[in-house]
Length: 114
Length: 110
Image 1 (tube, chains in turn orange, green):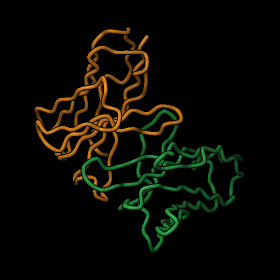
Image 2: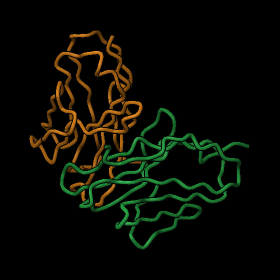
Image 3: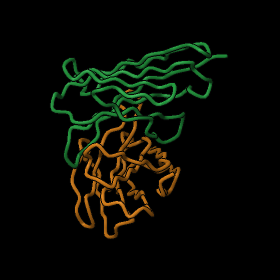
Image 4: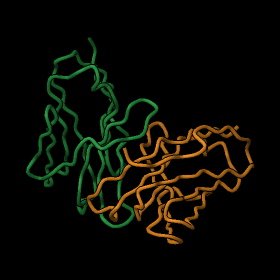
């Protein structure tokens, strides 16, 4: 299995509080991605990174920010959590820019915003 | 219209049955295609890539029809362990990469 960990694995928080999720990889892959998964929607891309300090928005980026100061870590921050951000968050890594190569997923973080 | 569409199921089949899943995609510029498998409350894992010529991996066969923008997955001799959600995934190219269907749930029954 690819060396990807996510922390925390579960979190319950209140509306309006900031939340940071961490993705850590030991594969030295260049590309990292954050997705959210909700019933009926499949996985949707929030933000992605194509290198240290290089990030870009995905299709559902509103309310989220990211940072990547080291190859191995990609942080997702909810500046002020809302109930609509209750979801399962998956981090993924890839060695090649999306083009045909496999993305490997972390175990996920289950976030509940009350 | 969703970019990648799948029948959500569930498909309930007996052990040993053959089952087929279909998927359609809307972006004709899509470059590569995959099937991922996701077990309940787990992360998605690559099952197989899908090539225009069709490809087979044991009991699993994937087909791509670019003209119809249609992808299929055939599972032969279903096992209980095949019970999972199968995600159709399309790569539009570039960094933003993958677009996921909502998944088709398979339940194989004894």
